[in-house]
Image (cartoon, rainbow over all chains, first blue to last red; front, side):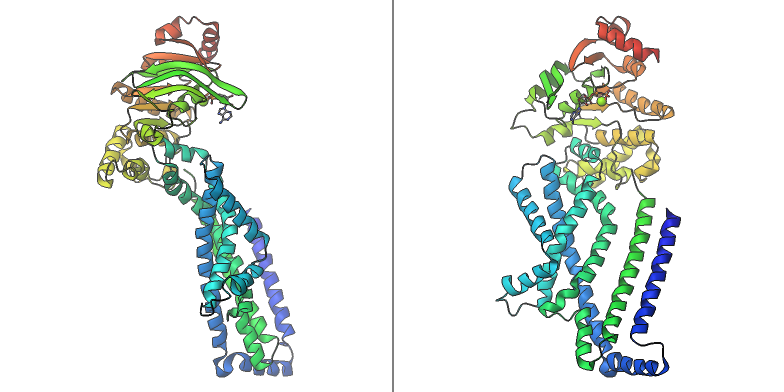
Length: 265
Length: 243
Ligand SMILES: Nc1ncnc2c1ncn2[C@@H]1O[C@H](COP(=O)(O)OP(=O)(O)OP(=O)(O)O)[C@@H](O)[C@H]1O
Ligand SMILES: [Mg+2]
């Protein structure tokens, strides 16, 4: 199992390297005058007038947006999953449960980008002064919540029924048992999957440019427009996404290992 | 009587598990519940603190009908502790936190009082050195003793034990039985579902033999074990005692 994971990791790294070399090749990295050309373009795209700052700012927006969207997603996801689990566990909340089901069906059943556009151009159409960033965080966060709800539901249902019974047998209410006994264990079980959700959102937010947010992707396009150079900015953007995702994936794997080593009561 | 059960019935869908049980327990009494697998022993016990909803019948705790709409079952459960076959310690909490969680959350004690109580109880179950240990560092027998301390932290009037030693390795059964014996000797009111006939005989004041969801025989240990009257009891005892 560990061996297998390790070889898979090596293949993965190898593949990344090949893709990187290919991308460099495409941007003309491997001939002498192309090299000069490359250096000139590189200078234009990233150094001249401190254009790299556009990418830095874009990255900052992307991470900011992703971080807060994930937080909203987790909060919404916990609420939705608890509603569904409580309903399934015999707590009488049919209306809430129907609303939760409906929420999950709609937000999972439509593209995140369409939702983003609807939030921006329909629901908040008249809110001209509202920072676009807030709209994007809301749109991506609420969308993510529908997915996180399923993650948490799995996490809660994986907890032995006896945990709830033991808590209830001491006189704790359903709510307190859920909050103090079930959720802490469920959250711990799904932390790696929440990191994955962050990774998914990091990439998903790349469409935020459509409502005018200068995120990382849009920053690349903005440089393109300024320098009339088509390859380098977007490839640089791709490399930045890739490095972040690879780093986070590495952290998730470490975390999973750590959690699986110290589990069970 | 602390607990009175009148014509208790419980079905799971088509399956009639309890078919009219009438019994009760006095303060300080120790009742062992025995019977074949699937006869409804656990279900009977779990109805007493409404872990299972009775289908019909009345269960009274200190005279209050706990099956009625107006009864707050959470208040009853504070007074009726339960110990499970599989312990169900909370793995994300230390031993101390396992014991103090409910009394503190229910505002029965402040954290300091609860901590003192936890120390006292752990001492009593012989685990004084495990106060700040994590459950996964404990053996099965130690876990069960902590679970008993956790139930005791609420100062219950009755303790319900559902096969507390069935999930334990043989060498750990003794330490848990010792703790239960000490509880019994201290006057604790106990319902004990068990396959440990020797222990039941030693500790119990009364034995209930449950078969097919009814109490088919009842009496003192010597009445039930030494002079069983019902053919089913005789058959059951001959099977389990031969082992
Ligand atoms: N939640 C449930 N849903 C459906 N059937 C159940 C449920 N709980 C128990 N039963 C059934 O009720 C019957 C009695 O179960 P119970 O657990 O009370 O038996 P028991 O006497 O405790 O047996 P054992 O000695 O094996 O623990 C069994 O046939 C069991 O399958
Ligand atoms: Mg049972």
